[in-house]
Amino acid sequence: MIIKQTPPLAGAEAAARAVPDFRNLGVVLRILLLVNGLAVVAVLLRNQVLSQLVGELLDMAMRVEFPLILSVAVLFLIQPGLARLPVVAGWLLAGGVVLGATLFSHVLLAPADDGLPRALFWAAVATLGVAAYFRQHVAAHVPALAEARLLALTARIRPHFLFNSLNGVLGVLRANPRRAEEALEELADLFRALMKDNRELVPLADEIALCERYLSLEGLRLGERLQVAWQRDARADAARVPPFLLQPLVENAVFHGIEPGVGPGTVSITIARRGPAVHIEIANPLPDPGIQQPGNRMALDNIRERLMLFYDLEATLDTEQGPDAYRVRIVLPFRDGGGGRP
Image 1 (tube, one colour):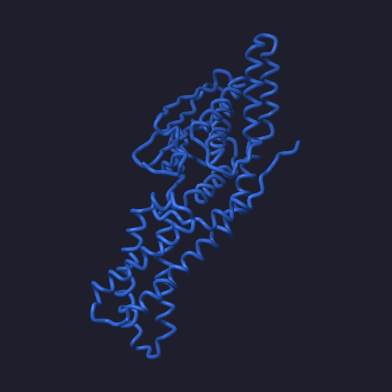
Image 2: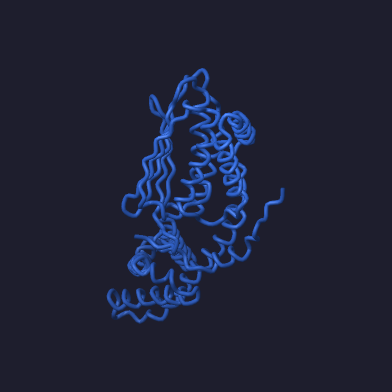
């Protein structure tokens, strides 16, 4: 079987050139740390008297922090407009914001100082340094690491699932041929999704539909032992999420919470949109400790890393084991098909 894969180079180059999302917490933190780091290095290089170092650092902070915070705040406010501009225009506008903030702060804080050209020069150098950093960061990390994680995850469905599904189809073939036909269609849909080029964000509604097919197939062999409780907020359906975000977690819930038991158990899936964020929770019952299936946490670690790649610090994945249930909670920003926010 040959799975067609689109080369990632073009997308990686475009991502590396693109203006970063200035509403992303990770981007903001990196800008603050990088600019302050450059300023500290500049002070250390020009310092000649060690006893004056503290004073020079304080003077640097007075000159750097206000325009830096002002620039970040303005870029945060105009981010939706920046995202719609061509790449070159977006970078020029971002650079203009930085120079404008530097000019404003210099006039406000040091009107008698003749160091404006030097302040504008260092602001331009810092802007170029930040742009080069984000270009290198994206180019170096996203293509190879994201593709490796995505390919690893698309192989995440356990091999025995295919055999179990086919055995389930054979079990109902004579008694209910129509259901057997539907199950084969569901299996085909599931593996068709696996064969897609799964490097782009997809609508959450598609992920939910994929989970429904998966659970329907598992219901063939587990029967009434597998109960599913959905609590679904339709307002979250348009959110763009990494492909195969839910299915491996639901598969874990079935594998660890339903298969080892002898009676019925319920897998609960809750999806809600709360303001600018989408909250997802998947819970499964805890079987008897003596028959609990061991896990290697590959799906959890894989998804956590992919959330970091797509959303940086804006998304989280947490787990909680209570007295009677194991829960996985995901919080990620709501972004529609155009990359917009509410």
